[in-house]
Length: 362
Ligand code: SF4
Ligand code: SF4
Image 1: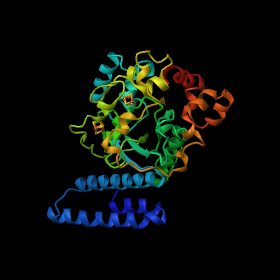
Image 2 (image 1 turned 90 degrees about the vertical axis):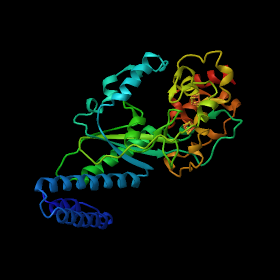
Image 3 (image 1 turned 180 degrees about the horizontal axis):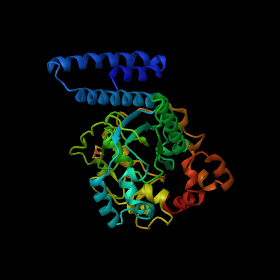
Image 4 (image 1 turned 90 degrees about the horizontal axis):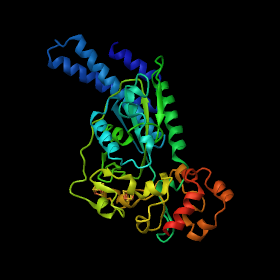
């Protein structure tokens, strides 16, 4: 298909707001191809020009997808090729053999799908990765039982999935006449989210095992939309942890056993949220006042120094939960708990577990 046909196809279905951007891009492309032809004395084969056109078309569509993601209030978006994650498969195998997953037995399920999205989504070609900053504007007073910042507001799974579904619809509108299929994920299926974020050029995995975006820091939710169309792919960024070891030095339980190696058996996030067992007696004195999750290794990270509080109303702290003191948590009744936390990720842990942590560790 000639470039002008691509242009017509794209332009017809753009909103007025995007018209000028697309038009300018295509004008630039037309001029660029003219120069390429001229430079090669008009001897470039038609095939090469068609490949060039196809690459530019993918780039234009990819740029549009990223613009739409930002318009949906995501804070960053990148795209990676859906492929087998060979290095991660080796690492995950060793990590699981070392039983670092503690009681999270689901990590052992779907090993093949977890390391190859093409087995998870039919005809998967691209992984569109989005980040959503959840760093709160307000925080708890340090003496109160601490809740991890990601859990201040509504359950983020639904917030992100709704936005990703909307992004998929908008991509389908972008390319009329071609059916684009895809699936959305956030922390809900066997997807190595942080690795995809790295492959999509959104940051690197720090020594604290979190994804670090160079501008947003690490207090971000990650979501993925895996689609069956080829797009233009981003380049991974280099790891910028350097010689810093602050996260490892400040971890209260020494759960970060080596750079990027987390022993979940010792991690307070796991112990206070995921674990069905009582917190081991030898670790209880190290829990401090961390009631639900732990942000210590992220708070220590210098890349979070410039984290900006989010204004997203979907992520605003739920009424009153930042001010709850130990006595209020202990006195909380099941009915009130269910009502107060019905939209919160905290409801999945259950009141019994929370009160057990308070009794054992505070
Ligand atoms: S979340 Fe807390 S306990 Fe877990 S590795 Fe980070 S600092 Fe350590
Ligand atoms: S605290 Fe330092 S070592 Fe740890 S993740 Fe941040 S930059 Fe990397």
